[in-house]
Length: 173
Ligand code: PRP
Image (cartoon, rainbow, N blue to C red):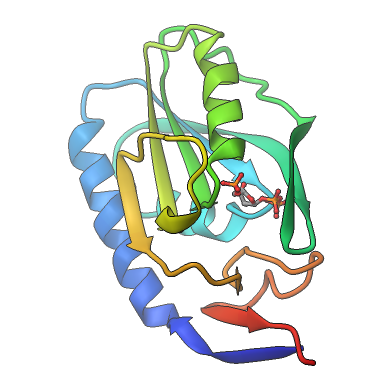
């Protein structure tokens, strides 16, 4: 297996994260922000993003998964659910990547059913060409090509999440 040269360098990612956090800071003044990281993939993006957001906020997490290696099973399993009460909260779901959209759509519907004051989505990566379910992305980092990517939280078989950059993942033949 080969990790090629970065698709997105650590510097490009950090610049974009700061830009997204600045937009969120502007939009959530006088709101009741609850940022929800969708793990495991979003752990690095989430922690970088929230440290640049400059409004009062609380945080929570959902652990959900639907992929086995490079393929989606189409079925989202939730391993850890929100502890926070979302009523009267302005919820911001934070994802590392929207691919088919199945995961985020499932989680979005699940959180909406709990009656938040508002719900928006922030995703670092948007692999638009693979979309199966249409999902609104309010804060989007990068649109990326239809390639399997790892690093900065994203994995292949739970490996490579610790890389500070994002690379295209190729299986060696
Ligand atoms: C990845 C990623 C997103 C989802 C996107 O999670 O973190 O949550 O896939 O794919 P989709 O748009 O096709 O649903 P994964 O199921 O691999 O679990 P992980 O976050 O633990 O890596």
